[in-house]
Amino acid sequence: MKVIDAEGRQWEIIRRFAPWRRWVQPFAFLKGGYRHYKITADWTLYLKDLPNDDPEDGPVNKAAVGLLGVLVFLEALVEIPFYLLFGLLLVPVRWLEMLAQGVAGSVAQAVRWFRKAPERVDVAGWNKDRTGLVSLAILKVHRDLADPLATELRALFRDRIMFDPGDPAVRAVLTRFDVRVEKHRTLLRRRTAAIAT
Image (cartoon, rainbow, N blue to C red):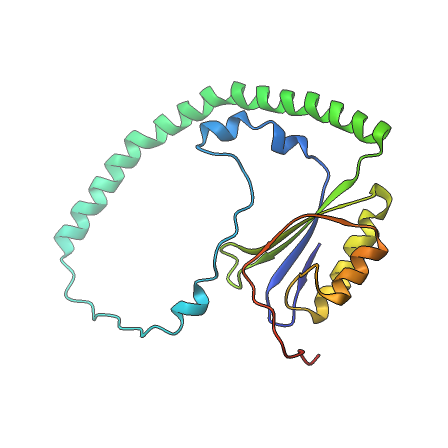
């Protein structure tokens, strides 16, 4: 579920159905790392204050551009078949990963049913240009209350510019749904003045 706050920042309220996809990721290891959230600063707020001095373009050397085009074409002739073959070799690895995720998912779902484990709801706030996250909260709630909680949080973001579990209005919603805040990180600063709606 996505919602835009009063400042134009996009927030996502994500109900996690498949935690086993985070547990079993051998294919991601081959790609150089595991998929996970990373909080990054919104540098666009600082870059817009810098002076914009674009140097004027000089005359373009057509021969150099043509030579560069030929070199790029020759490189593509070599790299495209290599990447196609490499992708075909990785198909069995991807199938094994999906099989392992299915087995882990079946076990996790059985445990969730019998132990009545809580559902996970993520509240993620993006930079204004959607290049990275500036806020992330991981919430745990009873499985029957996950959808109503997401709906309530969506309504809450219409007049809020950040998610802060210590804020009285947010804390009232979390208390009403008996939510446990497992993790909360933000780079957004709290505003002292109220925002007019």
